Image (cartoon, rainbow, N blue to C red):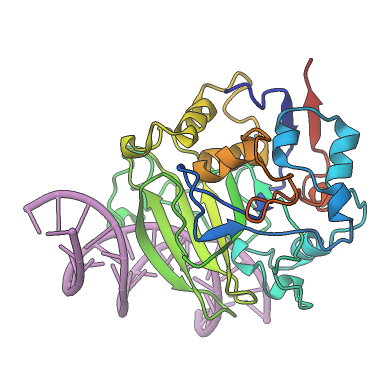
Length: 321
DNA sequence: CGGGTTTGACCCGCGC
DNA sequence: GCGCGGGTCAAACCCG
């Protein structure tokens, strides 16, 4: 299974302050039960769904080449409204800005919003462009870090904390905190500017695992929840959640990366790892009784390639024999 | 009682 | 320098 998608690499020198954002429709938990939420999204760039939508499954199975992929993504060279605005923004959109101000023009993240991918790769070091800050010295995080915060001001100056890769996706959900198979501990909540909905901060409870995630609701479309994962789990899903496809998939995603730990992964891969229940859906075979684009709750919609290009202009899709 | 949540304080980078 | 906003900490609190 780990090879299920190995034939398709998504190699992209991510732009530092970007995240991977995936919109989809339909989400099921490990038991194939419909969850109270679904990843939503469809392109608003005008391509015909009936002919252009392609399931991630297909992509992952590598049964397509670059062109088909481009087609699937609804290749639109200049369709960059969403993200271009983000990039141009003096204040690069924080994930939290999705569905909001940035795109301004009322382009609420409704089922008609375009799927967007964006990500930030750690290697690049911190985003210099964005006003993000990485918790510096607070130490705690990395194992080893211990300095207790307050006095811990002793941060190593030059040492900039490396930014973990981030990945965000929007889901239509009634609940803010989606069940993704991992155990999270909430460590903070903050009000989001220009939004009546707060942003919650969670940390993986597994020791040594520094994965974090932020959850917030789009203020333009309250039914949309934006989840941002940061970092990658260095462990498997908690035992209680094992024994299911999601766990298996997750495991496969955790196998050593032959290309190095810094290899950019296909957003779906990341998603699969970050949110197994979703990821498993992305790689599940086309066994649904419903056509890919007709399943009432299981509709995959591919991101607009044009947006992708804006985000990761040099991304490369590599297919192996 | 252990583990998770709440919440105000604190820290820090950035823009003005 | 100051205020703003995002991110984190940790004491207090809650709950099974």
